[in-house]
Amino acid sequence: MSNDHTYIASVVALYWFVSIGMVYINKVLMSNESVSISAPFFITFFQCLVTALICYIAGEVGETSRRKPYRAVDTDDGVESSASGHRSPFLSQFPKAEYKMLTAQRVFPLSIVFVGMIASNNFCLKLVEVSFYNVARSLTIVFNVIFTNILLGSSTSTRTLGCLGIVIFGFFLGSKGEVNFSLAGTMAGVLSSLFVSLNSIFTKKVLPAVDNDHWRLTFYNNINAMILFIPLMLIFEHQQLYVAFSGKFFSGLFWSAMLLAGFLGFSIGIVTVLQIKATSPLSHNISGTAKAAVQSILALYIWKNEWTFMGIVGIFTVLGGSLLYTLVKMNENKKPNAQASLSPADTGKKDIEMQIDTDKASSSALRSRIN
Image (tube, rainbow, N blue to C red; front, top):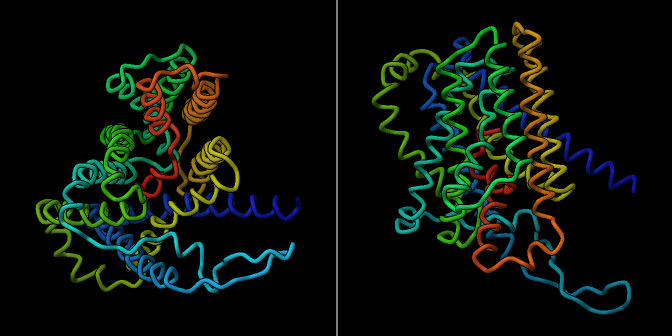
């Protein structure tokens, strides 16, 4: 039992470290001119490149691991069974990374949403304070409910609407109380929330194209995103990149930060899955809410942000409403005999609703820079 508790605590601590570190290092890359360059499209392009390279290397190592032979072993009761020799279950989960044009075309609509999601998220992080970041991006669950109602024609319970009301109230409260308020940054956060919600819907549709393998989808998504970012860099950031060739492109600190951000961006998908498996989806959401609170408060001290009572109340109102929403949705999905009484069509609706609301592991694997 003690070992179990130690393992769970270690996994949660790792999730917090990777998630908070990813946001903080991206904030530095997006806004600190002494370390980075003012080229968010290029920075995001490079992070997609790192993620794609890691997926490729992991796929090659995983393929090698899967080819290793099995050996027979004896169990405690003397019954012989098959088990792997030197095969790593962790490495074996990564599929061989192959880029096929037909599959890439089927994934491309999701990739467009993915680019919009990470680009708007990074612009939000560039323009707003880290302490306000979670408030600016708090409307994802509101868009989840809107799209669920529009696409599925399902109704929303009074409790759910109450939770959404709390989140929206916290959003406006936090915006009003933010000293260094940026309208453009806040709008980018709202747009990011919109794309996050669309990403979950498109992921559900596109997964069959990659044999329902999220790592294979991550590889295709990041390759497609790199292709989409190239014209954006050439149009909007050619001057910044030209200047960087005589400066930051020769900075070891800059490239160290870029590599670290790319590695953390890939790692967030893994640690999210680890936390869900070690605890539960509900515990993962509670951990994420607590992490967001610590991330926001800690940012006040690290970046020396000015704060107001209304701003702090807004942060915790948003986080509290999001947590209540999670609890309400999970309770609604656990109603006794609810699943048995649903028609096949209604069952399909419930499956999609649960995908949109609770499939955090899949979303994290795909939106590796978002958290």
